[in-house]
Length: 95
Image (cartoon, rainbow, N blue to C red):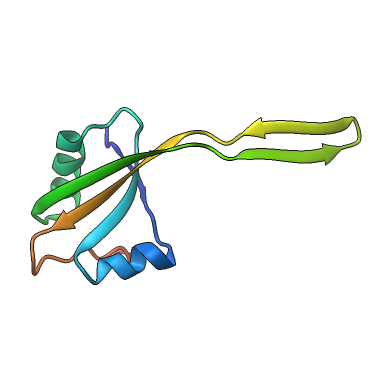
């Protein structure tokens, strides 16, 4: 089973792609060794560095006929992966 959920394609993350850094949403239980192994196998690149961060889910409120309902989005984890100079990960190649 892969520890990678999806690549994060935001304006800030796309700016990092030019520097050889790619951002992924990963499983909360994944460690750096597992993330490195999965990225190298899936994309065929050499990973030089990985930075991980845990994210806290946002509080959300919505009004319904029965009153207000509050809840929280799920917590998550992100990984910023630096690849060897010259290697490129193409997210749009298989479309």
